[in-house]
Length: 239
Ligand code: CA
Image (cartoon, rainbow, N blue to C red; front, side, top):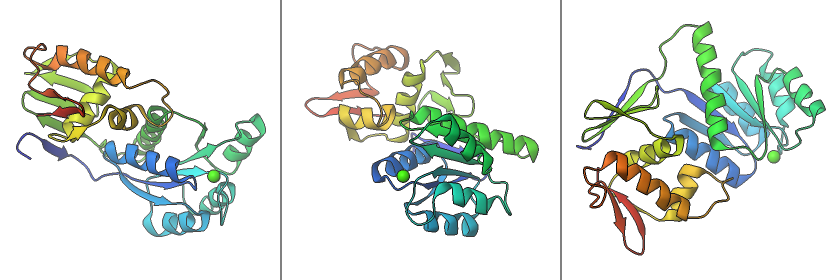
């Protein structure tokens, strides 16, 4: 823990994800957790509805086609007594389905397949809107690793106090490393964690981004001390 200090200014927002596709549920949950949210999951509609009622989540990510009770029905039932923001996930994407989803009281919708960054942005936007309507402090988390400071609310990285100009994926890769220090990750694991399940590029993408990141965070990027290459395995972040 010495290299990493995590400070959470306000209570964590809770996100409930209801989705019966196991891989997607897992990926969405993992990405939300990585952003610092408390995550609840259900793979059946009836379980999701019960959790929504007992746990009072701050945002619900809700699939339309579900065993038990479908997403539209859940949305309609919840709207009788709660204004919790709801994002519908739909595989259909037709105009009619979109309108039907919003008619039942959903706040937003995403058409599958969608990118994890897009989903996270929508969740953030809904939470922000909710906080603006019922004023409360923004969830704010700052990570520190050596001379690096990552302000997650601003997506801003400083090294020795000076702002680093990182591309979005460089930022996400650095955030991943800082959150998972001193563990070896293969290129495939990093692709899956940082780029998400819908990315179809190859492991070389990771090498390229690591090279760019080293130029920005290493004292001497020819002899990297922070992001180490573990031969035959992948990469390890020293801190
Ligand atoms: Ca489904």
